[in-house]
Image (spheres, rainbow over the protein chains, first blue to last red):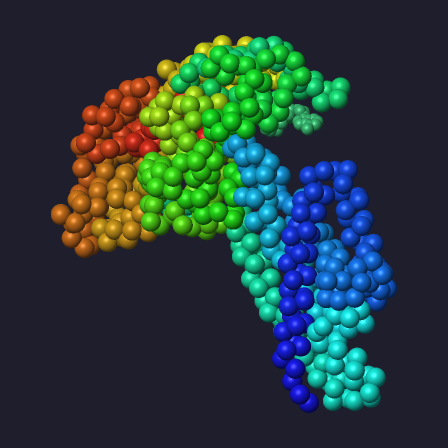
Length: 215
Length: 373
Ligand SMILES: Nc1ncnc2c1ncn2[C@@H]1O[C@H](COP(=O)(O)OP(=O)(O)OP(=O)(O)O)[C@@H](O)[C@H]1O
Ligand SMILES: [Mg+2]
């Protein structure tokens, strides 16, 4: 069973590019949904709907518009990855304790400054967990790319199925599964650390004995 | 200077602030007090435009605040919210530097500010500047909340029940500190509380509000003397009736539970008793419980031998006062006595109690501020 590092790198690159786009677009949409009440339903509804379309159907629809190739696959992946990122960004920001927002505003931060200095940093652990979901799903869906002429680990799997060559199938399937597991594991670890740190930092009721009285 | 001119605020049909007019002079410590929901927070937040009034005008240093950019205005007014609101994603230093950073101070300047402010509350820069808020005690967090509001040297500071959630000891320490800071840095402070003790302790001027209206504006002294309405009297509680402390008697301020021993008790027993009860003096009495004198641990050490009766060591050079004498008299004796206490006797010479410096201070505090819990 030949190990196709070139295909793995191909696969990862496609997912990375797609994730980069979906993070930027997803956070922007999440913020927009939070800032503009009237956009909330539209944005959250849109990303919900996209997710319900079967991936094969979505990719073939996109192919009709954008033609064959990696570009179309990346667009499809971005659309798929939006939901968890948009949702988590929106939930993370709106879930911020109101008094922190008020403190920020009361000290003279503009809306953008409140977002960048307070809201996004505090929502980050949740946003990150959205990104993790996006990455792991994308690793799987990218396999379908072969059907619309894109590269990656879908190719050996598809060829293997056509030629009933199980070694070939495995040379694609095993790396896909491994990559998904590795990313899921690694990112879950980071996510856990982020949330734990945030929890510690957010913990307000401290019973530490007051030893620093200057009275 | 801050002026409210006929300010009104409504939420739906409810009038929350009703024709409020108020002037706060520069450098004053003004305390807003009143029952819950009377509009204290609303009043405060109208000053930094977190809430806009429906009617009337507010001036800060002579200019109508609606003509100033709200964000710029807020950077010149310090703000401490009740829930402290330190940003958990920032260190102590970063929290303190928030407004200076917004005003584009350099990192070196921010550092300098953090250093000098931490010093103001006796917190060591090297220890605390890089900690996160969650690593601080409640009182320390509260201090940082106050420092953060002071960082860019705003001439005006708004504080909304900043010490509400603290234990009494920390609270008092912080009250002391904030008063010190205000005097030192000459700030105009508007401070919200619903604790009359706090108001009396801190305020130059107390503004008593009820139902969105000002009931009385007066100095603490004046408010104690002439509370305008019953609701203020209720807030004052016992303080008012206690003002007449000239008629207090020695018996009113003494500690009744004292350690008495019979004159035939032996020295070692007495030493043991003193150790267990953590005292250094015993009152010695005879068969009829009459006061004979006192014995200190030093007396025993110097002259005592094991097995000797305690009655032989009694010193009679003690300040003594009758239970019916005035507290003022007791106070004078206490000041004159070298021992730091005065023994209170009943007319029949039995021991009534003991007045120590602690019981005296407590009595005076009660007379001034009412019963302490
Ligand atoms: N956003 C709002 N919508 C409707 N009513 C409000 C709003 N904010 C405050 N109120 C009402 O306005 C009144 C005054 O509120 P405010 O917060 O100023 O009271 P407070 O004096 O600070 O009380 P507390 O001591 O409990 O903090 C209250 O009756 C409150 O219910
Ligand atoms: Mg309030």
